[in-house]
Length: 363
Image (cartoon, rainbow, N blue to C red; front, side):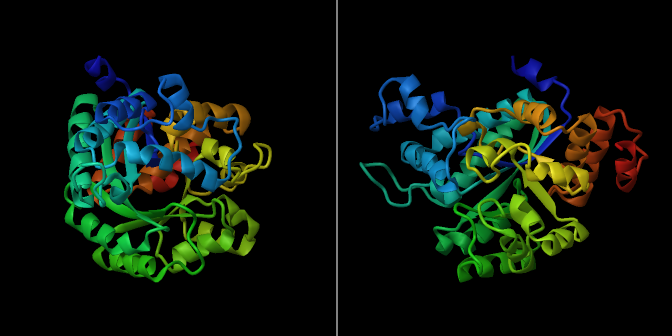
């Protein structure tokens, strides 16, 4: 089966997906039972309801994040499980015909920083090593290329500088950038987060920030001007301030949009007036992403179908998204060009076609 998955034609790119939001519910259940931990429900089907938040439900962003807090204690600090999660993620991405992905996670949230019930201490650095090990095996076996982004967390700004140090330490082992996730950044962000992102810029570590999801356009501007963000996670509410929106377009800031979670969390209230429609009309630099497919139980293929069938995007829009993601990826210059050339081949575009003229091929 792995060879069949490896041989699938892969033509998609994904830049915004969380490792702990991508876990298979069955694997979480199996890990928790193996560890002998108390479950929110004993039978799997009922347990699954506690660790998913499917499309069609309406939650605030905070309510959606609470799903993570339900299963984090069941998997924290389990090094074998963390490696397995990363390995399984590679298989799931390959099945969705993803050629390249940037996977993000908070190593601290998967670590065991305060040992409990006889469970050993597991550091954030150990988590990074486990994820790297799982990805190394999975990428080789399933024929995908995956790099990682380490997340600072708004509720634990004291971790931020360590995230930068880990990103710097593992930059030659697959870590390509940092993010700040959780409840949306404040304006201004915590000083520890500002200092960390400033240090990341000094070190040449790439930066993306969750902003404009539940917060307003000003948060997007703060992410770019204060945290030096090169990409924005979500960013839908940037449309509320046309001057900020125009500035983001002029700077060619990339928006990592996630249709399904935007509707579940009510970041966008309807498909009819979804920000993605305006982004597409204005040829904003954006891509389509799953965000938390394990929780939403929606694949990248289903995100694309929703975009086409309910957001009125067409195949040209999807192709632009793939190239937007590739050109806005945090890969080194040479690897980025290799990815772009590969995608040209997969999409039947002459390799000599310049990136700047690609948009002319998709009117």
